[in-house]
Image (cartoon, rainbow, N blue to C red; front, side):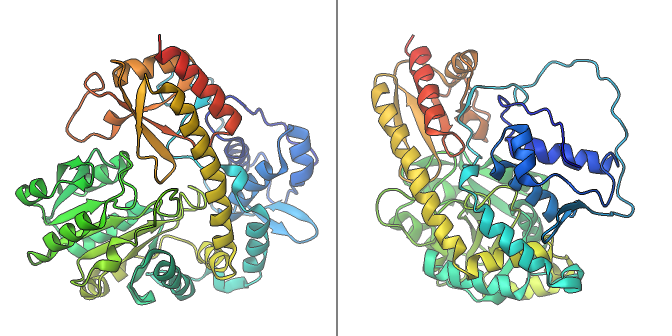
Length: 466
């Protein structure tokens, strides 16, 4: 096969590599591309589709990781024979439906969950993937329920040096995303817990707790984070916090409030703090504050981390550090659940960290994101009559509060009409706050080029100043 005609939408908010990946995956599932077929080289397909080679590489790597294709050294990429794989029937012509908000296309999308795909370390990732694939049959065996020992060992070392987390490899549990780890945690902690969450908060975790049957209580925030007096009155026995960079408000919790949280947790038996350290790698001002877990002397902090922000959302590898006091409960209940990340993927990320690629990648991404961060803040300085900025000291998004009378809903509608997508704080509010009452929006900048950012901000300045 020398050519593949794929219709790519350059204006879609779906990345080009994902459009290529989805097309090939569907064609393989439908047997339109048969097993054993050699795909075009990434260079030739990129030239044919008029996209960068790295875009095609990323699509191919995702297909390799999911087992749809395999890389044969010196020969190319070949479609795998997958026995019993579901065949998707040919789609019937559909009646046109009205597009939902998430389906609409925007010329400028300040997405809060993206990354800069140009920064992905394609060459190192491909090299490590080839090396891992040489390990043979052992990759197909069922692995350790906690995750492979090698990965847990490098994670323990990295967390200690980079985040001040104190743990042994035996305390780490690996899983495919935080949702899985929170479900596993329910098995470990048991039923009937009452969860306190900062409000507004990370909605995915909030909904996960609700679906798990927990009582969830939103706790108001001040500039330092979760308000302690309200936490005390809530009757909660578990507090879910993001002290390094609260989402969505962007607060960085100071040491004094962290100590107050630890004191609250130690105040009664069976109280715990869930520390979600989702993007602590990116900090632009001030001295980094070690993880809350590193200050814990009473074994009350359960630490959650992920590679979604630092590497890519499709790298579905997260990890949880359990206090020693919970390891017995894990051994009795949690080990019945098989690990949800393949041994191959675990080995790839282990080697990526062990060989120093991860640290070098983080240094590159910090420089790249800081350049975008500084550009965005300089553009916002021209809009002080429109909005004020907060949450700009860390992470990959900022929060804007309007000072010219605009509401969140009005600002979003104006932006949408101008082809720009921004996100309202009310989407993350658990108390039922409506957009009409909110005066804040979020701008993410990781996935935008600097040129796109300048154009999008110019449009926002025009339409928000009207």
